[in-house]
Length: 203
Image 1 (cartoon, helix red, strand yellow):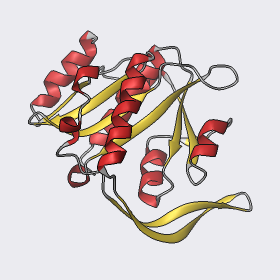
Image 2: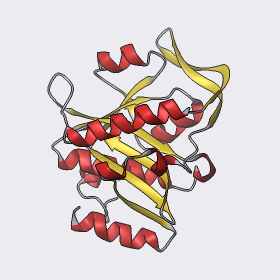
Image 3: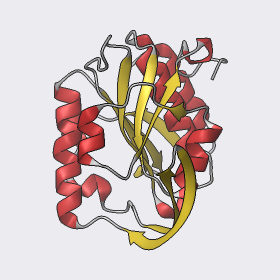
Image 4: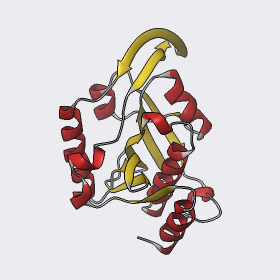
């Protein structure tokens, strides 16, 4: 862990949330025991005639124990292949996490892939997602990435968040993501100077 990441963690512990990297040995079902993925969705974005429009599509997105088991294996694979997992902890309990793959993707290797970003239901809107996103972007830039790639949930609230973070439609949609999640919106973020360091003033 870099000095900048550590100092950021010290500052944020004072506010009740600790942000830090998560190790492979921590990735167990117990880690997610008090994490609530539940998301009530009403409107989703759909592409029609070259434009994004909001469509009513009510459902509740909630993970099963099997979904968590798959997530844990995916996050372990992220770490084993050179990626990173960041966590947000409230009194030692995981309440948010983000992961970025280490392998460059895209025709020129310009992308680093943000494969997860989630905040527990009861703490959404508290700035945790923003901080995790900034840490992920800074790490991606440190690894030589030019852009962060996001295959994002099409829910209106999710899209509003990514838009606020500066994301735009990906110039080069990745076929693997499009095939796996055809309803996702494929986004990218240009990694500018503000993401040069994790925990520094530019964040």
